[in-house]
Image (cartoon, rainbow, N blue to C red; front, side, top):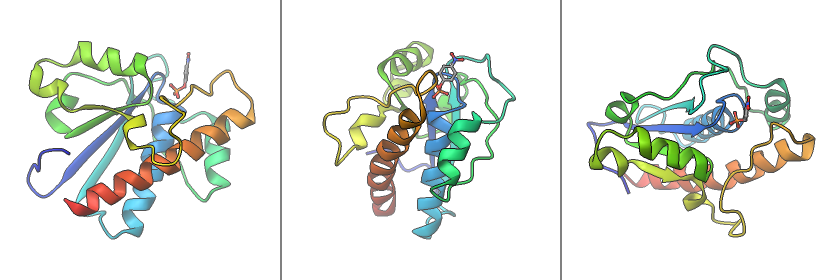
Length: 163
Ligand code: 4NP
């Protein structure tokens, strides 16, 4: 799935604002990785293609919905940058817009091969081809994001455990 770089696998989730979907994915995968005793082997971060929320905590609606599932979100938003392609092994886009923005940012072919779509990891939700932006949605939008993230992050942690 991805190249072994030393002992650590480095995973970066990317959405638009880095205040809803990708920091929730980061916190969720981190919890699953800890539960699977893989924390020493996996580094996880998140970033946004848009930098307008840089430095902010995650959206309070996302934080509350995650907290209700026992997931604490402490991330501060930041914009994705070209150097992220050096540091991370897998850069996982939440939707096609994020994917295309990452593709444009990637400096070369090797970097492009690190970009994935989150939908590739959905095992139980084949009807969803992207993680829908919840920013202008109600509470159900945030619950849907968490449901989809739980599905994909479970697949991811399984794959990371095999490497
Ligand atoms: P995210 O959600 O990409 O999941 O963090 C959004 C956050 C902010 C905006 C859009 C989406 N925004 O337009 O400010």
